Image (cartoon, rainbow, N blue to C red; front, side, top):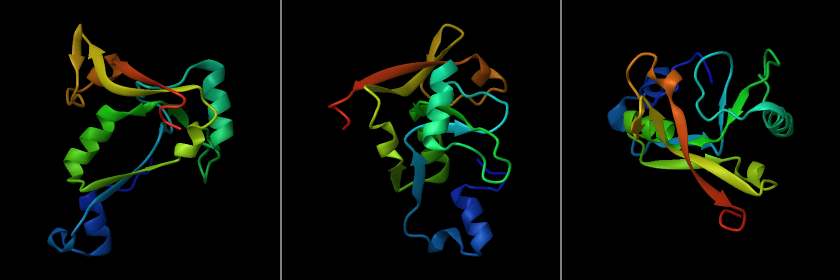
Length: 143
């Protein structure tokens, strides 16, 4: 996470290259989700598992050393990012970080207010009410 504008439009502004000059927009995302500070993170790991993964993956802020909150891959969030950035492809990084796990979870939707939500919620505060709906993949399928 950064305070910079990390969207495709922000890249154009920051580099001085117009959006019509780009042939492709490649999104780069980790195979798990991280967040620094407060705020909703529906897929956040809990308890000892959170601490173990943070240490193992070295998820600490480069400047402050503050621990990042870690969670399972959030496909709802990534789909939203792909849509607003007009991604032509996606690069998934840190897949090797998942090697030691027997299974992984992928958040494919949320549940809130008794309804399944497949699109990232735009309503203020709704994300804090969301519970992730996961598909689980066992080792051997993804390794």
